[in-house]
Length: 57
Image (cartoon, rainbow, N blue to C red; front, top):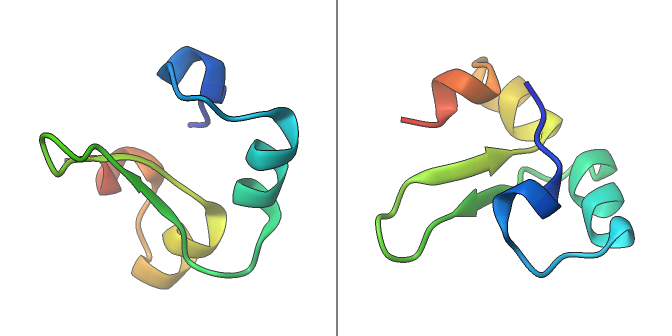
């Protein structure tokens, strides 16, 4: 499941989103207040062998 960064109310551009999605490095967007994972890129899902929904706990 993928979210548009605009729907997450984060100040990211389309280029930021493309870099997040296509980069081979593991990337997680974490809410600083709650510590919850807001989004994970495909590299993170592959590394942890979990889907985005499972990573967002």
